[in-house]
Length: 477
Image 1 (tube, rainbow, N blue to C red):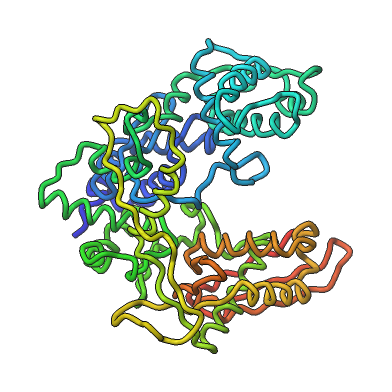
Image 2: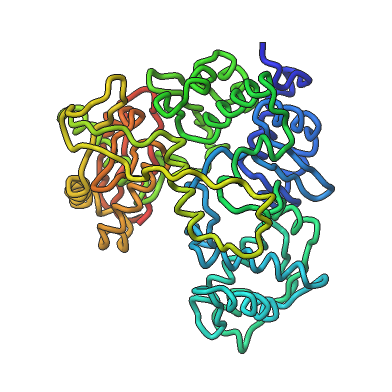
């Protein structure tokens, strides 16, 4: 029997699960972020949440009068959950750098700071970093800086007291903005589990069990494997058995995993021959909803159907990607190669990682060289993908956004990024590997509605598979 939420009565379980989903979806909750009711909901269940999140997932919840901060145990590097700009675009490197420098600069100010003064402080730090800089005379630099400031404003670390950041970005000589600084929220935004100056590799940020002071005995190791399995299912669209080591595989197959996650989150665990997925039909926990509305999501859904049908028909296979642990190590090595060497305390640092082969091996067709028991995935080429997207655009593109319809390479890149983020494909040199979960979209069909006086023509994609029977929203031109 699951020990999760033991102190919660059946009548209150739904409210408790709502609090769990809130704090998992938003690791930082403040009086106004993500909404005005969220903090009260989480604070009501703070004690039970602290117990269950640590016991089930190895996460630590820290609450104060004005914040709830979840310190996640991190198992791997993940590029699918970026910070977003005011218009929903992922942060680039410049914006991330400005965000970190803004946090440092705000910490040196008092109760208030003017945006121009803050920009000057960030610029003074940025100029000392090769290839960065911040020139307030350049509109792209001002826009990137305002995106970083707005990210902090949305979370309440900064509160606009007067003026307009948008107006300042347009003309800093004629406009200004004044912000109040909330020290408590500012501290919660940057709350690392390690002293960052002591790290020499990105992998030292991972394996948070040791960072949180958990014991390393045999029983604790089994418990940590169970936590890792729950995190894998909770934080990814699907946990494939082929990616799991033997110990983790046993935990993924254990009945207790489904029982614990379903009781903790209120969602349903779906098991298939290839892996385990936590199904969020409400969309309250997922950071990406698929199928969804908009040009990229609609084009991705239609392309997924064509990829799946082709993989079933042609039977072309490729060797499996590197195991998950090796992919992580390869990615970490590329990041570590760019880390500065100054200012590090070597005796407290993690040992360097051994190099691994970071090139995924695959074959375009056939079973030559196959290793017994090795998982092999269908492979589609970039040229084939471009051809299928061209067909989709010609047939259904009347409802696509004009800028994406006119830039097929950009649209294809965003479509493949979305499918990869949903663990439906794995992008490799020359094309993509077709992962098992994509098969559930094989029966997708679409219809185009005629133009009406109310708006332009749109199309709706529908599922033929009853395991994924949500109707995708109409795209917005």
